[in-house]
Image (cartoon, rainbow, N blue to C red; front, side, top):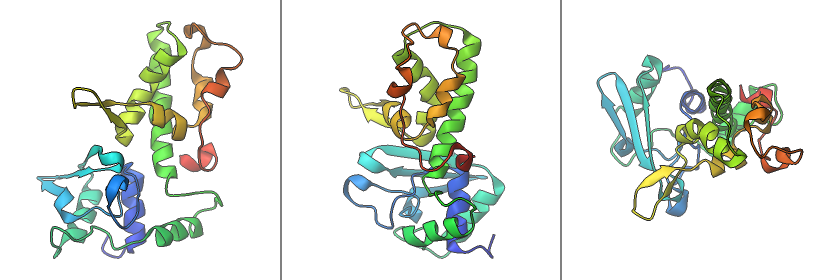
Length: 212
């Protein structure tokens, strides 16, 4: 791990934890992302690395990993750093350039890691949804199927009481691949019709294969 470049370290962690990549600076509503993580956002508790920070839109985010390689990577990069120092000395441009130069895909982007994680989580939820066999409306099914993916990406919204609850709307509109819909048992959707595909339109970067 010590031989990895900063770009390789960022991509290794991004492929393991679906943290928003973000930019080098954490300011305003953009919040903290993978590139602007600082030592103060990270705790090493036993064999686990815990990352707590305010993400985009000032939404609190929390990620944990007990993967030995990822914990070692994080610990090594924190060595000798102060609370305000960034975990990675990488940039958006260099990370994207490295990813494209080492990939066969011309459309691959750092966002693909989050898109892929969301899509895989939704595919698993579709299987569970079909097995449960409960009939409901499309809107109800979207919330159930998208919940695990939204939780994985840290998609939340603030309620009137000041608490945060999982919000699947952005997960569906921007991250889950539209082909996931084809796995749903349509007989369980009480308001399914031929126009349903249009209501599940997303904006994935690259092909489904590039997300896996």
